[in-house]
Image (tube, rainbow, N blue to C red; front, top):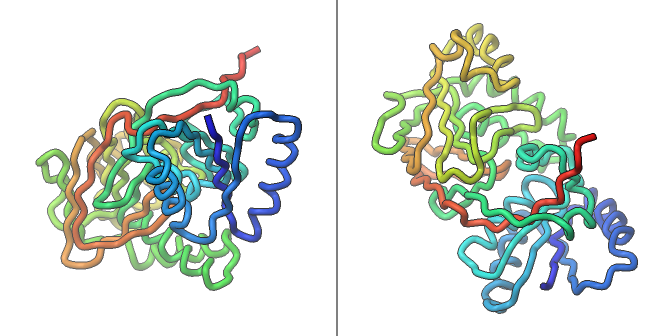
Length: 302
């Protein structure tokens, strides 16, 4: 099997990842290649082109970076046989791997001696999400923060400013959500998560009951509310207690679904594993077992 390391090519990431990879690859004898991405979406293009040109080759693509790199590799291998992926997480913002505690996603040796599992992936029109799709307030935070970061604002500062702006201007979102034929809201919402994994935003346990291989999307829609109510909801939502909290349950709808339809007269900004896409309508489906994932071996508990 050929192993291809797909490395986040951003200048502030590339050097750190390359140095760690070089150290771990020293003395190994397996066949491998290293590819550095050149910008947003380049990882998807590279992986898909490689899979098209080598349809019968058995290849494992190792995503080296954060949530965006993982998303691009997963999106690239969807639909191709003999192709798998692994994750070497060098950044603290990688939310998907939090589903698998007790595994070292920074150890190449643990990955090479790991286990193979099948996991689901979510498709939204022509885009994919391995972890969580955010809609409404959460998506607007990410959208505005990404714009600030692209203009040179430091990441933490960008997110803080974006949260404040979204609290003031994006608590009411005119988007309709239909899950397996059932309307979850009439006209507006605060936010909605459609989850395969459990964590988003680096710290929010937004989908505590989600299972990555059950063939279902966990859907949690929070209704439009006042600022005071929103602030009260935030604590339980961050800790993953919102689905058991009586106050929170009065302000949300939760279900599991295989198909979700979003519609609006305005552009809907959708955040897929941190990447933004926009349309006035989305058809969202779960693709059961579509991703072959190589997990690092599980560390024995002492």
